[in-house]
Length: 79
Image (cartoon, rainbow, N blue to C red; front, top):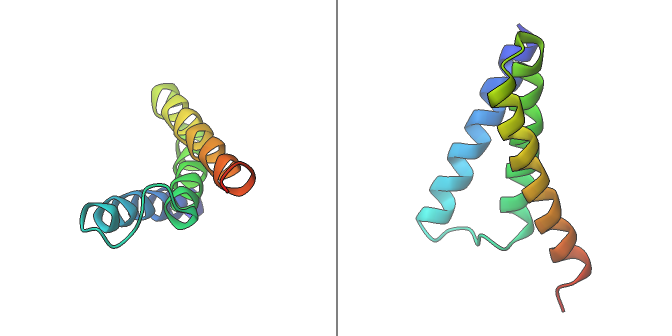
């Protein structure tokens, strides 16, 4: 039950972030967007791992890695 809630939380974060970017209310290169993607990837990944849904888990690892890389770039390389 808890993992299902994590999955729904992560999915909601992805959808909300996408909506906010699409409406111009959030920047793609900003911390909030990347944090929402990172937390969403961890949450969805945690919900699919016990089910051995390997393609979905791999997607979340990649998605989270991209978000983490973007956050590191924003925090340490952006002037």
